[in-house]
Structures are given as structure tokens and as C-alpha cells.
Image (cartoon, rainbow, N blue to C red; front, side, top):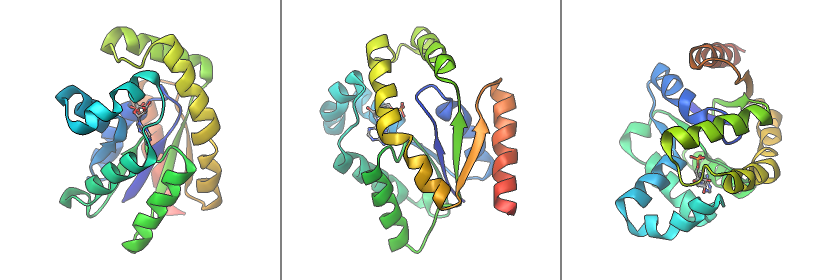
Length: 191
Ligand code: AMP
């Protein structure tokens, strides 16, 4: 099972991903988590991307595509994966398509968590209090929302055209949204 989970910052991708990944027994792979771990551990990559993350900008495609390819090449991803936070622009979509095509693989579904922009901002500001992420401040949130709207949201059309898109209402409790995601993916796969 090869899945993507997409949505605006604060839509709940990272919250819903573990249950979806566990259901299909595939690893949940979050580029944001990988970058944050590198920053925390002070790796070479972490030093390169720290300021980019703090500003809410996108890490350069070359670096991002490389860490994703390295991660997908690990054994636990051989039979499937759930990618969270990648791809985020057209270049990354094309890189992923090329990577999968070269392996004779394809995506099975792209889950889109649909959440109103007002709810998103409220969630991000609350997360800022709870988790203290460096990029959850008002200015950076605005920048991440702008990049999402201009670069990432249009990718939904790409996946809709390939009949991969699964829309899920992302407003509700974690359990409610979890159940909706699983039901919607199941229905999509049965088609
Ligand atoms: P996230 O945890 O998905 O919200 O990602 C946090 C931050 O990591 C983003 O604001 C970017 O700076 C960086 N990042 C995560 N995924 C990507 C990606 N696919 N391309 C470029 N930058 C990314």
C-alpha cells in the first residue's frame, strides 16, 4: 500500500498518519519530522535546513528529494509507505512519480484532509503553546499557509486527474477523523 496524506499546515496530517499507517502495516514517513530530528541532532543536514524551517520556507527540492529517496529505499518501505508532508510542489511530484515508475510501482491513494483556514490557524496557535515548534508563530504560519496555497494545494488537481484523490473532512475529534480516513480509503480501494 503506497499512500500520501496531504493537507494544509495544521490539517492534522501528522496526527492521523500513525493510525492510517498502522492499519496498512506500512511506515509513516514525515519529511517535517525527519528535518526536525536532523536539526535537533545537529547533523550537517540539520545545520543546512534549520533557518529554512524556522522561516517557514520550503527546504530545497534536491535535499528533500534525496532524503525521501533514501528513506523509501530502506527495507521497511519495500512493500509500502505513507508519506506525510511530501510532495509539496510540482518538482517533488515529478520526482516521486519518476522514483516509483523506475521501480514499477504506483500510488494507491492520496488522502486530502480538508480543514477550514480559520480552524487551521486556531489549531496551529494551540500547537505552538503545547509543542513549542519554532515555526508555529504567527508570521511563519502565514508564510507556510501562503506556500501551501500557491505550491501545494494545486497538486491535488494532479492526483484528482489520476483518480487517486480521497477527500476527507478533517474537522472533528482525532477518532472521528481517523474513522473517516480509514473508511474513505477502503471505499476508494474497492472502486
Ligand atoms: P511539516 O512538519 O510537514 O509541517 O514540515 C515542517 C517544515 O519542514 C516545512 O515548513 C518545511 O520547512 C520543511 N519541509 C517539510 N516537508 C518538506 C518538503 N516536502 N519540501 C520542502 N520542505 C519541507
